Length: 279
Length: 279
Image 1: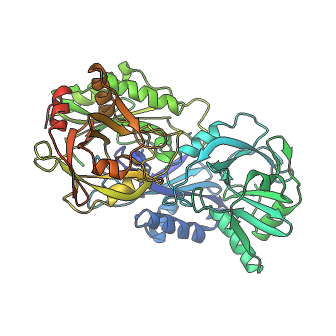
Image 2 (image 1 turned 90 degrees about the horizontal axis):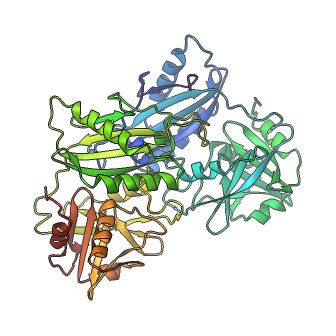
Image 3 (image 1 turned 180 degrees about the horizontal axis):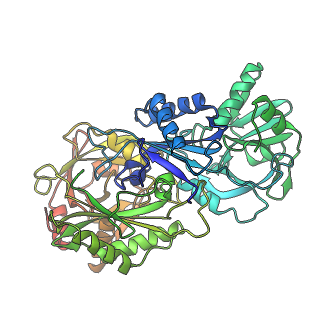
């Protein structure tokens, strides 16, 4: 934990008030991004997503200038450590509140920036790919919150706790109608008969920034990614499956539970197309 | 906000780390109780509920002795204020975590106790009763988390934000199948043809401690409260409706949206039966 650094509302303080609505109700949003050579990767897209997510739960997102200023302050704080690479998590909450679900009349959003080291992944995830397991934990359908990376993430916590077998890198989450939605910590894409598809996120799930980058890249290639209902059998019979997030980029899925998935170099091609620098 | 006092893990510190899993993911639970003449009302039942809720998401609840010790520490801290009455909120989170949904191998639960003044309610809520509005925000069905007072409360925040008309005291929450589940900040009971009913909470909603007290009291009277599927029309055609939580006790519901509800002295009788001391 000593390697984690943070600042709250621009100050290198020891914490957030327990009356903060982010703590009290999960009343806020976040995004996690990669830091490479001192630069926040895809910051414009991340900021655009922070603004959109805030807007969906009626929080006015702080300005990009303010967040950038606080990011620089956090970076400058590290005299004894190299903060030029790693992970930065930006959390925006509705602000400090009194008791009760209604926010105070004046409620200034809270900004939290957290720097931590890059996660230590198993070796060869880029060369060999990863195996996923099928979670028993299901996602509830809540269109009001679908797609948003909000702070109400108990479902992900419960699903992640299922992962005890070290062979598996992450889990596949389904809703209660058996639709595949996402991985616990990433978005899924499948390739089938020349078509690229990704689970629809109208009912639940998080629309990740790496997912958006993949959608945008296909658009520049004049190809449409179909956002649609997918079942486990669609994954298991796909020509290829990849999982994507802003930290590890894009990874080939080579196995789901005990079943081997048809594999190719799709993840590698996507990383290359997106100019993702592997760890 | 200056009237709010708190302690975190027994210390009167300025906050919780933003890496606390309660803040990061809403990975924890809470209960709010009334403080009267220096005594936490219904503490044994509240503690039992904290233990049960923790258990459902695999957190080991800190001991009652530890929480009581920290409560006394918080009370003793107030040289300049009278903390003998008001509201105490107890929050238990899975503890401090690094990045990612998986908790560290050793994760000590975090205890937070917050004292705040009694809310200022409209006058006459005990004599006249209250009006409720029907929320447009729906509750998602998630049996894994139903009943638990966890820290993932964005739905309640969105629902509470709908309440702009000061005539209404609280809102009625339904699931996506039109079942009435609860009020935003309390549980509902209806009286119909001699039968007492309350919405089933198997799919969503919070099982409040005051709700449990009411269920327990009816049991001592040899009467069963039926926990069942209820629709808005069941509320609107009931002989009486009450709303209950641990802070305001039990209140008569006299109106839902623009419709007047049959009213009697049920709430008053329940408050008396439960020895609830009105504010």
